[in-house]
Length: 433
Image (cartoon, rainbow, N blue to C red; front, side, top):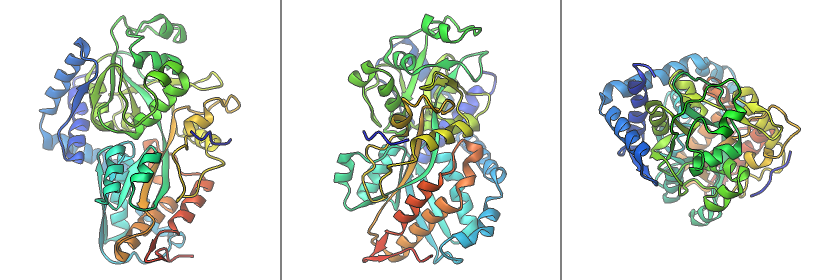
């Protein structure tokens, strides 16, 4: 295919875990904002604000433990990397270094696994990752206050222009954005179409038992209850992917709202980061919001997610297999070079009308790491190159239990070529074969 270039007693506590970690990671306050104030929004804000007041240290420790256990159980990652060291550029890892990276909350669970494993692997290189949202990550990359920016949306034309140097874009993984919901008594699998989701997020479908939802969910008793819409309050690649899908699905959405990392949401409650969105949904019965699938996997039983109709008319519940199928169908050709312009790359656009691939999940997106092609410091630049090479060539298996799909071989080839173009004073920093 070618690119188209353009709950239970623990509910409040577990939800607050996610919220508090978002605050700690971002180094700022937990934000709630509603573009359309109303009764539902006020209630949601009250509940989530209360949950944040729960013991910060206990909650942060709990999620950190969850992520650490996931890293340990996902693979014998450090051993795997060590045993495949012939594919790395060197058997040594260079001088001690600390890399600063920031951005995407979509990739935060995977970056947590990677940064933990990489420090174990090298013994002397730490990667500090701030989960502050794709928009903020791009802003920090532009300001050169981080070594690596992370985003689930490629740079826009304006962002490329604003960057003080050539940016190398490295797709690091792929994942799915799902319609996550909190419907008491109903678990995974409530069905949605793109047009119905667009009407819900436009505020045109306001009740869970709306006839349009009932018609595509035979045998499911949907509650006669108002829908609470949850979305991001910050610039977000997750929202870029979701609004991209809604724009493809609805001419009204495309005209009135459009595609973007930060849009003027017609209705709903804004929560900071994927972590915050997960917390708001988990804390608010009858809520729905777009969420990276890893946050549902990390919080099983707290947050459920729906099946989305693809172009073939099949309702697909996102999993590794159908996310990988979407990447294979939508990212097999016409990708730019790493130092080229990625602004119009969209797996979502590429597969939206794909009726031949019956089992692909339609809201699938790359997540990217971005660095400057010309590095200002040789030692730091070498550390950046080594980390990127390791992520692309050795660490892909780490995400499989978190809902992240390993890169296909054609994307690895593009990434490797891109990494080899990163230089210091005109000399490539990559030293491998």
